[in-house]
Image (tube, rainbow, N blue to C red):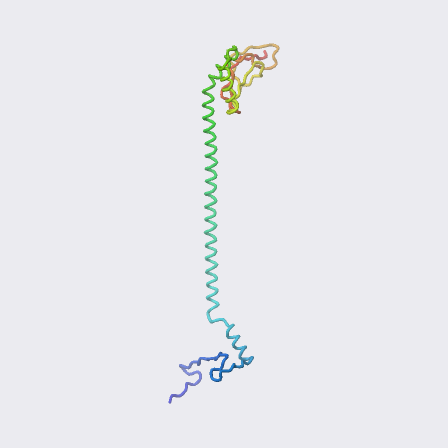
Length: 209
């Protein structure tokens, strides 16, 4: 027969406590009556957290927060990269449109400049009264088309004040009665397309003494 270990002896251990929580008594088949003390003890046991659960939960929460912060930082970096890429694309589109507009305008200027000699002939024929019949109609149609489609305008007329930005003086005379330098004769009219001067008018001027 083995003697029981005294309290505090080496190798002693606490016996596990087994609680029968069954509501039906297996022997009688009747519903057991639970005392308030037993019900309070059972509720406290269920509510008590398992040993070590709190540290594990705190560690998981900290890890989740760190991962969320890392993902937020990555998202901010991706958004910045996307913004910079969008700005580069918008700049490229603006430059492309500006370059396309300049090329188109340059092509139009080149075509119109090639027709200035024809327009000079038409103007001379009109001055001599030779611009009549079908040829005259075609010449007027050409001038109207250039005016409407390309904003081409002829300038330079006797009596206008001389403007070195618009006129090229080939001859000059003085007049004691003149108060400013004006155009006395137009040798070749000038042309401009919108605000761009294609050719300065070649003129003779009269200036004060």
